[in-house]
Image (cartoon, rainbow, N blue to C red; front, side):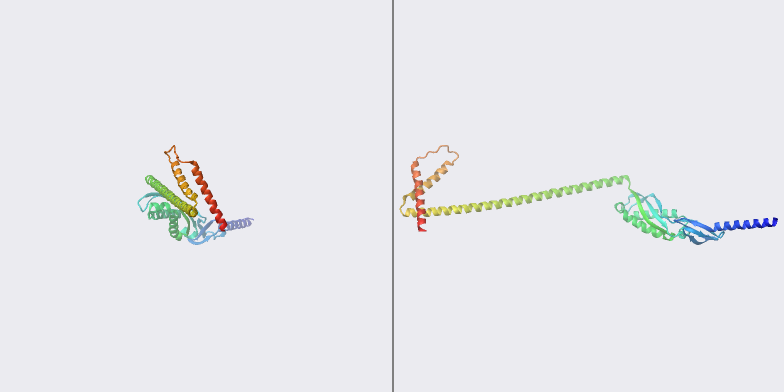
Length: 312
């Protein structure tokens, strides 16, 4: 009986040891994590997410590496620009571990190393630029920093995905000077635009005046042409009447002479009547004579018209 008890106890001990070794040799790795394994102090392999097995008492997990993208804040620091302006600058870095073994064994303090590396490169990149370029070329600055830092951290198994400059703060007196300069530039542009508008208005006014002058000259030209045409027609009519009356005089018709006398007489009366300073006009003539002359003119015209019709 005591012999069986000792045997049972030994079996129980062996079973417990086997269970302990099994549990010690099984390692579960969470998603987004990787574990580095050392055997007798030397790196052997990396455990991926899921169920993994180790050799108990020989293998051990040395580092648990986060493989997800991480964020690192870069502290604010003073940077001297190319034109000797002091600027306070800070930033933020996004990175991801792509090789667990390198990040565990190639660098002792990854976060501290990356922070100091970014601080140094921010001073280098910003110090090579003038203040105006620094404030207006954020994308260029971020691109240069990303290229430099990503290349420097590649031996550590790190992939830098993005670097952003968060704030650039010039001194207050410099900000005031820049504000005054911006105000002066805006005022200058406003004055230029106002001058351009005034010049354009004057040009348009001159063009309008020019067109009005041209149109007025064309109107005067047309009026002169019409007046000359009317005078020409009047002259032709008078020449025709004179010719007709001359023929009547040749034939001994005294009424033709009366026509000329009456015409001149009427013209004289017209001039006298149109005088502004004359209120009273004395006419030492007989109205019957004028009426008779006008009647004679009518008879002459009728005779000339009848002869013309008969000849036709």
